[in-house]
Image 1: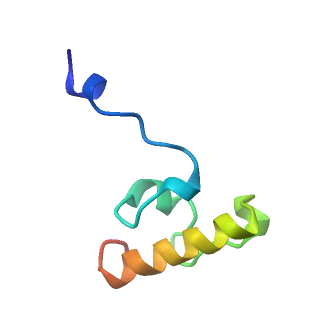
Image 2: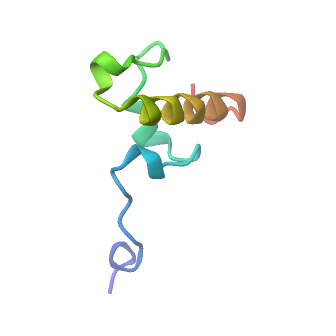
Image 3: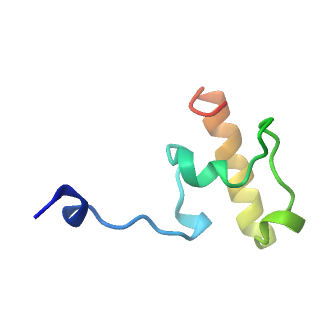
Length: 65
């Protein structure tokens, strides 16, 4: 059994992300680091607010550029 099998699959639901999830959160930012608006992300207002807060927290902890 490989390590990939023993680890649970990451949820694709933005409500389950944490500020440590660098790759999934990078989908919601531009190359220059700006947060994409709902118009382009397709998230609900509640999900967009949560993702925005997570990105800002990640920036503050210097995890994301």
